[in-house]
Every structure is written in structure tokens, then in C-alpha cells.
Length: 331
Image (cartoon, one colour):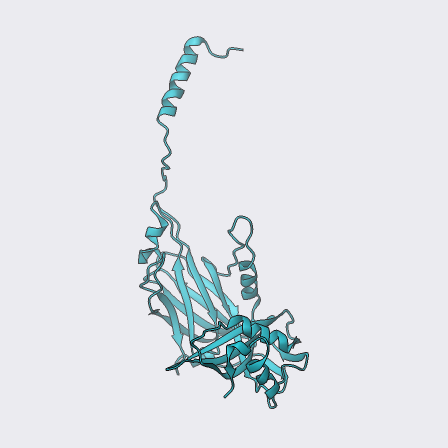
């Protein structure tokens, strides 16, 4: 069925041809402005002497992202002010403004090396209340003021250090009880058990202090005692897997062995869990607890306990089948 007479058909074809001739592959940006999102990252460790917050921004424009990454104003908010509060319910226990600090330059890469800003508060008589006192019922609140933008807010709860109930630290520890049981109590919703080994690589003319670290346990037992059984041979394998055999090292002097219990809240656990899951689109599953921004404001508490390793365990580290080639010595 002809819906157009011949003359009208020709006119339509002429118009369409002219429109197609004017098309090209250039993308015209209709909106000249762009949205900026503040990005916050902070894991408070109140057992340390410094609390730190990283504040940057997302950036988007009509040019190359690689060019924007080299411009300080595309990465930071120069006029931002950052505040940290410690609260007990509706009662504010302490408050301090964090000071912008320029860290050492980043390694060369996509982003500019300098400045390298983060906001810190250092333990002092004026800020002591932020670092001390009972943590069982206290929250930390973060607020960020950026001119022309809504107030950025986040909060997290910090938990008291874990208590180790076994083994007894007053006696030597035998890693080859098969198994050796570590037990602890932690009020945080999640806890992790780590081991640390401190040693020095001794060369012909110098010695370099080093350490190795690994996680053996991840629990979800709030308010209850947790435990983990450790086998000596597994520990020797973990040590051997982390130390490279350097022929220049004369021997390695073992200086300390620790068990470390880390208490973390649910938001940090979820953040780590989602970061480990990479879907087919490679985007991931973002986790954020920042109001009027994106990122993470959370905490963790580390409790380290020195272990007096018995002679059999020392002998296995020095001369056992998995680690003897690494030349460990306790003396």
C-alpha cells in the first residue's frame, strides 16, 4: 500500500540522505558540568597513637581520565575540614579536628605523586580521650565539611582488645602438640587469628629486620569464646612459603613469635568479603557506609601476645625439613 505519493517519497529520501551525510562518530557532551563524589577511607586502630582518614574525590570530565589523575584539584578537596568524635549514646566524650598531612610522595604511576594528603589526629594530652577509656559502648563519628557540598557523615563502633585464654603465656609453647589449641574471647562480631614471626636477615656487613605474617582463623562468634587448632607442620609450611631463599644471607636470627587476635565490626568484614568477589562484569559489589559520599569508615582492634617457643619447636624451625634451607637461628 502506497501511503505517500511519488513526489513526497522523493522529498523524504532527500531529507534522510542529507541527515545521514551529516552524521559522524563524535560524541557531543550536552552537560558541561559533572558530578563529584567524595571518597572516604579510614580503618581506625585506637590502640595506636595516630588516627587517619583518607579523603579524595571521583572525577569525570570531557578529557582523558589519565590527564585528570595528574591534577591535584581533580583528586583532593583543598578546603575540606575533617572532624572525629567519640560518643557514648547521645553524650559526646571527645571531639577533634584532624590535621591535613602531606605524606611522602607516592610511587610513580597514574596518579600524581605529590601532594599525598591524609587527615590525622595524634595522641596528645588534648586528644587523649579519643584513644583511651572503655570501648564497649562507644561509637566513633566522622564528619567532613566541604564548601558547597552536603555534610559527609559516617559512624562505626570500636571494640575492646581480645583476651587470650589458651595457651598460657607464662610457659613455653609447643607447636607440635598436634594440635595446639588457641582460645580467646572477643566482643567484636568477627575475629581473626594471625601469627607473626620477627627475624633479621644477617648479611656479611649488615642486618635487616623483617617479619612474616599469616591468618589462620576467621570467626563469626559474637560475645562467645572462639578457638582454633594449629598443627606444627602446617606452621612450618607457612613459614617456608613466605621466605625467599637469598644466597647472600648468612643466617636469619629469629627475634620474636606472636599470636595476634584482630577484632573487626561487620562493615569491615562485608567490605573485605565483597572485595574478594569479582563478578563477570569486573565491577564488583561496592560496600559503603558513607552518607553523602562513598567509601568506608570502620575500625579494627589488634591484640598481640608474645609466645615463648619451646626447644622442640625452635629446633623444627631451624632444622626441620620445610625450613632448614632458610638458615633460621634463635641465637
